Length: 190
Ligand code: ADP
Image (tube, rainbow, N blue to C red; front, side):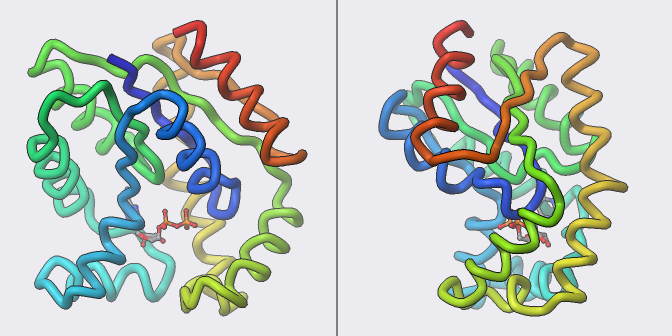
């Protein structure tokens, strides 16, 4: 099984590369941002709860996220593996994911971190905001907060996997195809 954590700041291109990875490797995409937006669209209790946090660019509480991912993994039968996109975003989430996979005799194959400079991220998020309809993409203050939260709460997750010898950094600036082939080189060696 291939269980890959695709890591990087907001706007790094995780969603775009995930799409290509699921096609090539036949694994499932678990994007916590997409799952929350689905709940939001369906007006579920979970969606209402998450909205408060997402609107401000803050993190949804760990126990809520972990519960949702647990359900999502359980609902998948005979999977060849998963790409985790936007998760884990805190060290507590990373520990919970390890426990969850370990209890099934599984583990994370590796983390791929897309490295993109901050000015480029801001440019991409603004551009995406024109078409994504995501209010958190359209407001500079919300974008600032997401980048701040990323640095403070999420960056330590990279160290968590580095300590396990599972971190590979990839240049996230370039064409979609160039970045994808750099990712494949890493994945093909797992
Ligand atoms: P981006 O990476 O572009 O900021 P996402 O779609 O991954 O966007 O996430 C959108 C929002 O959903 C986040 O700002 C946060 O509020 C919430 N969210 C998504 N994943 C998580 C997570 N693993 N933990 C906590 N909150 C999350």
